[in-house]
Image (tube, rainbow, N blue to C red):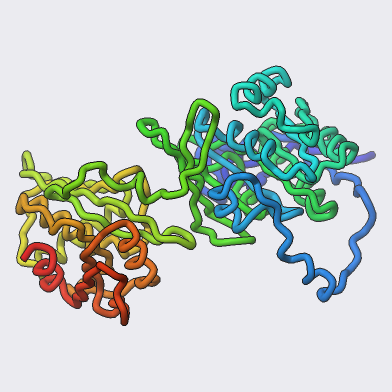
Amino acid sequence: MARAEKSAYACRACGAVSLKWQGQCPECDAWNTLEESAPARAAPRRGGRAKPAELVELAKETERRHPTGFGEFDRVLGGGLVPGSVVLLGGDPGVGKSTLLQQVAATLPESLHVCYATGEESLRQVAQRSQRLGLASAGSSLRLLSDTDLDNVLEQAVECKAQAVVIDSIQTMATQDLPSAPGSVAQLRECVGRIVRFAKQREVAFFLIGHVTKEGAIAGPRVVEHMVDTVLYFESDPGSRFSIVRAVKNRFGASSELGVFAMTGEGFREVKNPSAIFLSATAEMRSGSIVSVAWEGSRPLLVEIQALVAEAVGNNVKRLAQGVDQNRLSLLVAVLHRHGGLSLAGEDVFVNVVGGLRIAETAADLPVVLATVSSFRDRPCRDKVMSFGELGLAGEVRPVRFGAERIAEAAKQGFDHAIVPRANVPKKAPGGLRVSGVSTLQEALAAAFD
């Protein structure tokens, strides 16, 4: 007699499979994440077997990309949409993922046949949004489909000869070969796997919209992010009309690239000068504020860093940072006390990057310290001054990458004084910009305030 199939338990956090239910996942140690699912059957092979190809012939088509109609989105993708690529876009509910990709689908070249498949909305809802965005006359190359059956979506993509497919969202798609519900670990892994095989074999580009968890990560096992070519995150501040699309993985471009968009009544429009939105609108600098140049992907961005030093209430002092590493802030306060002669033991220190941008590099060390000193002394830095540089534990100012490009960007924005590491001083400064090279924290304080 044939042995009866046993149920398995898959972790919805990491995808690990266990033969029995447990309160804690043995792989990722997450609690109450094991869900019962029937054992997956091997899916029948579709299509013929792959055959090797000559590298010389393939090298001629490596630069083939399609513009999306948004220069900022092309920048995030690495220069345009690559045929056969799979792009995963995640973000909070209501941030504008469907709106942006619907605009992209409508602005792709008319020579590309595009299929927009949705499992969350009806065709009437998609048509109403298209009319609101002014995309109703996008052309005859865009096809709409409302279905949650992935097999049918792929079949319809073949029939309409689609060269680009948008799936909204991947958590709503399911295949009939698996008995588990849509959005489960098994369905996500199988559906994404089939999409990747379909995209590579037929040279069809895919955009996948993914839900995010309350921690901000894309829902589902992390293996899904490893399978796709590009992972994008949609970031938006509720109090701002600007949104950022950041690439955390990209096989066709820089993995730290970002694009800036503004939400208007007619949908998203690209921001061609992102440095302007991260700077304060005030004409003169105030105490506790200084401008720095952050390097994001392949371009520099001018950002304003603000600091507030206030007398602590009680015995517990606070070190809070938004936009920079909070542990790094505690380290810089200690360096400032040891090598700058400024004790903040009884003071609360708050640091914020204007515009909601996150700076992960150490080039923000020097401007954070200068803004903190400016707030503590209640004395503004010199007007039209910018700074960047890494600060070591011995009080030395270390150079950072792309120093010449950062200085050139500051000169374009009208700054006339730059306080930078001595090793980053260019041989010839841009016209109208005075560059002060410093090697220690004391020299930087003197250049900023004396």
